[in-house]
Length: 587
Image (cartoon, one colour):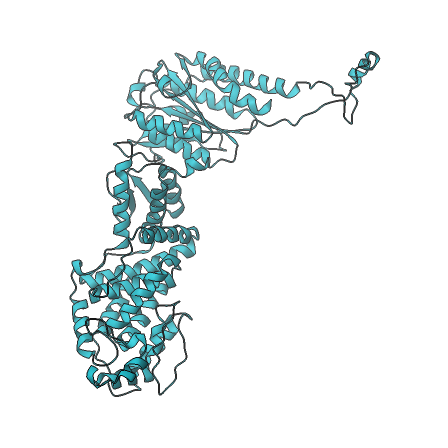
């Protein structure tokens, strides 16, 4: 059964139902409109596609549930909004659905292995450097995606070369508040504050700058223990933590500003070789002169201007967009031209074509139930032959001793209950027009007969409803109502989607034996997809049976099938088809 539950239609349906969102498989794109998550048709057994699908659905479901409104502002502003919002919603999703944490972590590991998380070059655009730092560092520290550790450390190193200590501190302190932000509006406000802080002038002479101290305190309060709270006056603290991108925030304040002020008054030529050797790596300059140490003020201001004016081409691609593109690439390997998904359950009212002949249906029901019950009862009462060893004597076999036959002990064996889940699916497509009355009576008679057998868990449904949906007539565990089985015809024959629905319903049942019984007359819309889902159901242990109403068209679909022309023929047909699977468990 595990292989079936890993198939894309089942995975999409399970996750969609779990998160309360709709997942539709169709078309060639992976995207969301804010209410529905769309996936392209994908190979059902592609392991990598399954990882991408689970992570993509989790991520987009988080947007559907928790994001209000779209991105706004300049390219950099929209990008930062997206990064911080992703952190907020994925963290919130993980708290509500712990399985999301694993799905998203596996997705991140896959993307890192494929090189989809961009590793910044030393001469990367300042806007991309800011992006990379927040994206990699926060995903590693806040979302605990360990595969990003090396990228986070590298991006953090570049970040502190491009931006001054004061700006880096303020950016970190503000950004880390996103993990506990209450809304998308709050995230946008945080991004606005980040952009404003980037344009704030550096304090060069006042070591006890209020702004700097406030930024330091804010960073310490909002990073939730991920930063070092200790500050020592009179000396520069340029240490960085491997575990949190916000640790740099404590390197500012009184002493950080004093270090910045002092070093900014010297040119590179004024610094001796010994002084250069004593400087920490975080104070060194890159090839463009960016640095928070000596002589970098003009370069820092230029870097800020370039970051704020960055274009889409200057910045890193959105990770979710990259995942969507990977899914679309995998769609080319799908064996079907049309996408196949689990049919949605509909509650539409179906116009009744006619009234079921209750007398005729009851006759068929009684005949079928009597034959099935008779076999089950006979199997349960079957005697086992006596044995030579045991604890209880069989009084009827004692005469054997006079002949030297020591087989006089009773034998017993554990009997298995029927313990079977059965789903009966009715085709009510337009081609069933002349047979729908017979088909409805047949489904009703079958349902009533099976409902009366101990150990059988039954559900019935009809398709199509609203083009490609399914309507449940009797749900597992419910009592049967004859009115639900009186219906007319409509639409085509989307049997593959309906069978995925049947598979989805059956895999959720605890009974070890599962049977899908399809009552139909014609060919499905997509024969290849229907054959494929039937093969998958059979491989997963779900037995599929076809009943043709006035047609043998199902021979190429179901290995076990029968044809009937009237309800009177139903008992014999079903008895022959159900005898083996039902009796096997009680024998």
